Length: 120
Image (cartoon, rainbow, N blue to C red; front, side, top):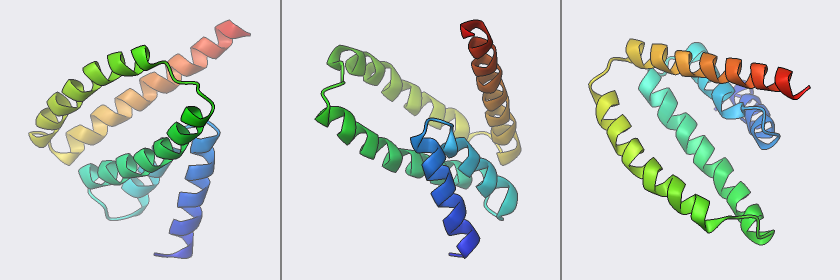
């Protein structure tokens, strides 16, 4: 692992911890600046996100900030959604996966931008 890769991972982890979206930035780095196929880059990004989420989960458990009803609803919808998404992704090529992901990132960014404008 090179120094640039270590610094990139550290920067993305720091941004992710601040709620900026470092996981998405890590995915962009992996997909664009390494020879990693799109699906594999997304796998690395998910592993990164699970590690970051685990540390955040421990903090929220310690501070008792979890609503078990909400967590249950999210799990009941998230697990089947993940299975269906996985089955769909198996049939798509890297180009289609990258295009779909890029579209979601664009829509998410636009929604975030316009919701902040309304809050001001």
